Length: 69
Image 1 (tube, rainbow, N blue to C red):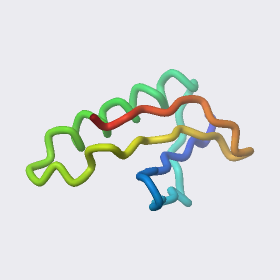
Image 2: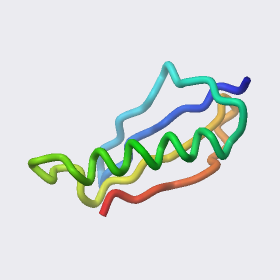
Image 3: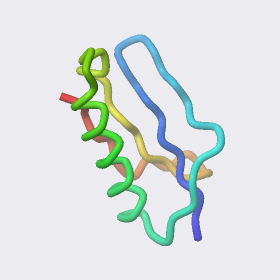
């Protein structure tokens, strides 16, 4: 299992995930991020539009960036 982190990036703001979650593969972590993006897209106030979720491992390697739009 590998720990992945899901950082929320939006313009000049960033919300960093310092705890992360463990997944068996990078693709499983990317799929999880995709579910987060879908949830944010369907939020009632649409405040997350224009943000993205970056999936990284503990070494800081970015595996994917998924936009919320």
